[in-house]
Amino acid sequence: MKIASKTTLIKKLTHFLGPLINKLFPELKDDEKIKNEISMNMVANILGLGNATTPLGIQAMKSMQTKNNDKKTLTNSMATLIVLNTASIQLIPTTVIAIRTSLGSSNPTSIIFPVWIATVFAAFTGIVATKLFIKFENRFRKGH
View (spheres, rainbow, N blue to C red):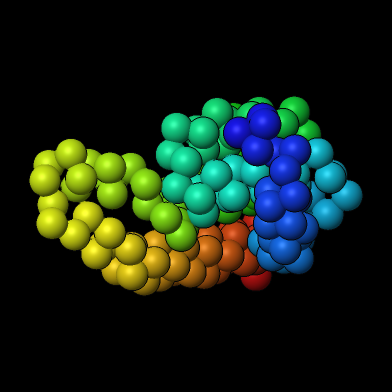
């Protein structure tokens, strides 16, 4: 993934994800380093690079934790990243295709479209729920 991060495809994907990341992670509006780490994590998920996503996600979480005032509680951005990483939107679910191929599937790529639907739906639902919980928590803390 370090080599891939230097390619134009990765740079274009991270640039494309920029507005979405700004919208999903408003707390990080001025932190390009962390937003880039989140972007790389998302790109690795989108490309189906399962083993690469974990260290990238951990690095983004470590960077966010350094800015966290309450080390025992997740920030809103940390919770959002966990949801996005867990939903794992993938264009090419390489691991599942590889497993299906190794087990002799006659059409190992037939799961691509259902994976798109499931992961996009999971991400959308997770993000909406996370943002609603964040909004509810903020109102609760303010006493409303």
